[in-house]
Length: 239
Image 1 (cartoon, helix red, strand yellow):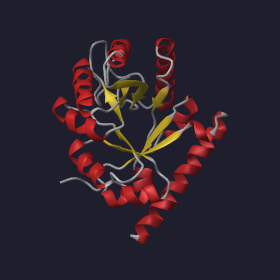
Image 2 (cartoon, helix red, strand yellow):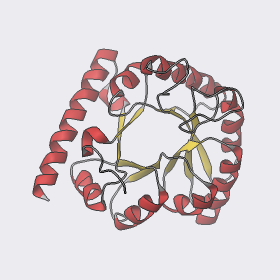
Image 3 (cartoon, one colour):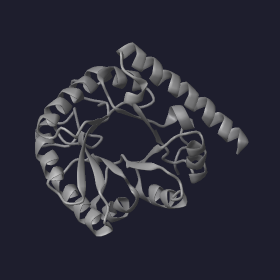
Image 4 (cartoon, helix red, strand yellow):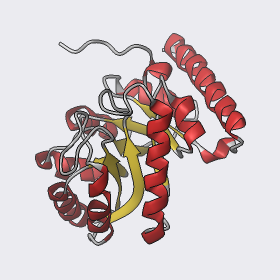
């Protein structure tokens, strides 16, 4: 465990250096960017070590992994983010531990999340996941709503009991006009964020960038970066 703690500490320090350098290059304050460590496939013991090392935001993408992990770490001061594609049959479970669901991409999911949040007597932060590779009315290959669906979803979230509209999220697309152009993709997301904040001033969270492209996300103006591999190492293959 000591070796693992040392490994995580060194990796975190490197990521911190990258974020700080990216903020400096962009003329931003380091405090403007929140690191979310994506702990999927890694055990609760790693989450505990990360907490010891100062991490307060962690993310998961599968409820079957996240729910027991969140329960095992319930005594820790952590903010849990759900970042994966979410099926409605998992919503009740996710609403019991997640502080923010970053992957809201359809109206049916908004309704289910609202009902579950009210039932659990919790307020659930929500981000509209934007798919920059999706045509009008379609979903992206990695989840998310087409850009012309942002306003409808955002309004639905803002009007739903138990939910709080926090902002937008994207994953750099693998296809379409932004494939291989991460910074351009993130800059486009920032434009959508500016538009969203006209009607919803408090929805100022912009979640973009991962281990490979966090610098581009910071340069574009992201408020949150989601980093897994660079902190925890290459993920073990499932199965």
